[in-house]
Length: 300
Image 1 (cartoon, rainbow, N blue to C red):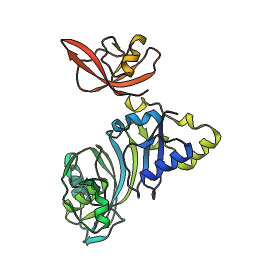
Image 2 (image 1 turned 90 degrees about the horizontal axis):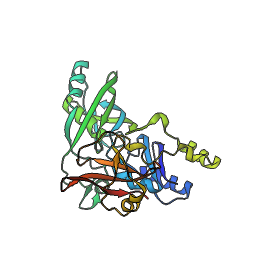
Image 3 (image 1 turned 180 degrees about the horizontal axis):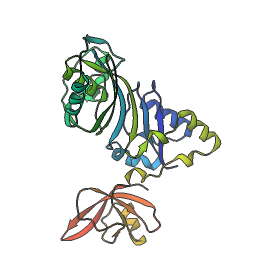
Image 4 (image 1 turned 90 degrees about the vertical axis):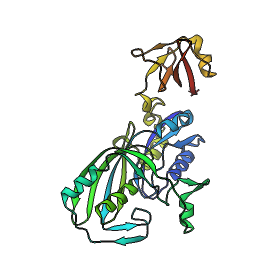
């Protein structure tokens, strides 16, 4: 079985817990998620099954959408409501101040990864240092906030907002930084991931629904094709005589674009056979003034 499941991760489970659960229920080894979701958070967790694990790294780079709650006036050492309170302050912030501050975080920003995270220092996850009561040096990382909208202000100190952001963005750190910018501190008190790339929470499966579909033998009905999250990439078709070259990762000089011709560039291209089978991902290169196709990720 090859494809992608859109699972709704419940709060209280790690992303790895969900992978193990699905792996055991399906009795299949090749199962992997496409980006960690905090244990306390719920939401969309696409799982790659079988050969779909070969494209998990590309899904991990997709934009993510979240709904979060920011609680102002209380800062914690983990930037969420599971950490130790390290700071309290009176909240005296106007709606205009909130709107202006939120707008200031749209675009490219830098974040310092929290100690309670899976980022590594000298090969060891930061959260393991945090459990030992240690703080280690961390480098700021650049992330991109594509959109951010305040949905509701609940006085005296809560703000519910939606955000669309690049991979690697810590929403709890975003909440912490917004609170600091406002001068009163803050932490993330609720988080749900509503979208990962093409995968929406509206179409996600509860674990109970997943288990029920396995029992009924209907799981394949909910399995997305391997190329579903890659539909935005250009597509080429190769003749049957070139299929073995694709599978061996060799250069291809006989192909045609399904869409209009695309100039050689570094973006990925989907490669199909004449029967519409998705074979590989590749890149178009120019060799001696001739366009050739180089498979970079063979799927079968």
